[in-house]
Length: 357
Image (cartoon, rainbow, N blue to C red; front, top):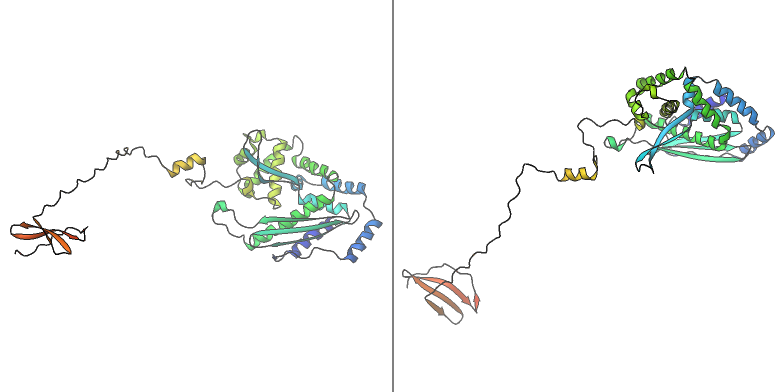
């Protein structure tokens, strides 16, 4: 069994030494499949032996190893119909480690798997076939390899981080295929048993809780008060087995690449930083139009008065030459042109003075 599990891990490492940009063909040759089907029909699986092997493996696990059998990861938000609020949606189930145990004991399963990455996403593909029942299933998993836009401009992960993300996608795809080919009734009880082994009996449980909290503090710097806040308890004494199941599920999800520590404990914004959209629409309106309490109210606008028309210009005589007419007057012996008329059209007044006649 151990040799088979090691063989799977070696194949993953050999395929993903260099991150590729496209997947390899995922098919088997007819001769290869016919030979394996003939072997499966000649030596069919024994369900009783399967349960004996898996049960022996699970019972031999230490509490530290049993923690890795299940995972628990956030996968988005869902609306609570009773409260009307959006709450975190959690995916919980058997992990890759249990899939490896089931795969090695079920028998007559063959797999092909590959992984690659493009500019923004990592991909993992797994295809499995049950040679005895002739069932086949393929799964493709995709994960982002860009930093979160919440923390500034998005950037692509480093090459090492991209490779780790691709490996995680391949492992998740492999897990999903195994649990589709092997009926749930054959492995569900081993998933539940692993939780019991990890938690221990009543005397062991407080020590297991303390060890789990300490591990989060040492590995990721998560203060236990933050853990209490997430679990909605006031202290360590209020942590139940259901809470402990959530703690070890988070640990397993982070360890196996299902989630990151930031998914469970988002970093707080810097002190004094303004969060866009905080306070809702009313707060945004206040920011757009701040109140000015000390400013005096504006004075009412005064109605504009129209200027009085200029008095008509007086003149002494009007001289016409048949084409133009000029109104003139004398001012201290000087002839001043007051107004000119051309074909009945009034021209702009002028102040041109002429020599005294």
